[in-house]
Amino acid sequence: MKFTVLVNEGPYTHQASDTAFHFTKAALEKGHHVLRVFFYHDGVLNATALSVPPRDDRDVVKRWSTLAQQYQLDLVACIAAAERRGILDSEDAKRHGLEMDNLAPRFRISGLGQLVEAAIQADRVVVFGD
Amino acid sequence: MAMLYTVNKSPLERNALESCLRHATVGTAILLIEDGVYGAMAQTAFTPALEQALQKLHIYALKPDIEARGIQDKILPGIALVDYGGFVDLVAQHSPVMAWL
Image 1: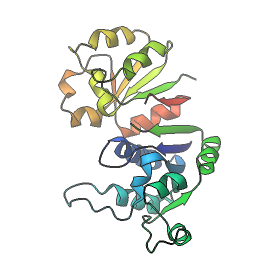
Image 2: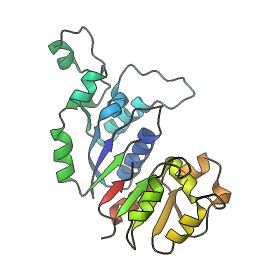
Image 3: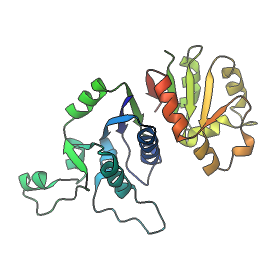
Image 4: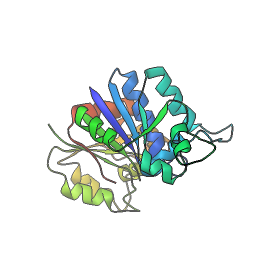
């Protein structure tokens, strides 16, 4: 079955992104197809490469990147939400005249159309938020 | 196909579960996750409402979230516990799936 996952909350302040991760992982392990994980609102904070959690805590950002690599998972952060919160890929940074970018590996930044498209193509859309 | 609602707030903190139960039609499935699992506890102020709801709805709760909160010995009979794989199965078996945020 084809799933689309929507994550509306950032890591560490709320459990939503943890639940979204464990759900997505379980779905992939069961052989389902996760078309896309879309990060919206504070959810884009899951995509910062500059997150450095203490060693005895889970690394939420890295965990998404690793899962994406393992399953060729499409992780997309909403561009408007990401730019507001200081999450930029190299192209975005260049366009805004900034010297650095910080999008975590295996994530990409795109528009809300990617959520609409994934919602239309999926059999189920599962939303995680506060 | 029956609907699935997910509820992630304690009924003792917000009214999400209460309004979800009020809107759910017979046969609907409700999955309690995160702080929503407090709604699955016996002997709370919310227990009578849940006992009544169990007569017409299928109510599930996410086991890892119950165990994280240490309330595994206080769950109301009639509530089915699922792990993340079970969560995935519930999503596959129901449509649409709505998060009661």
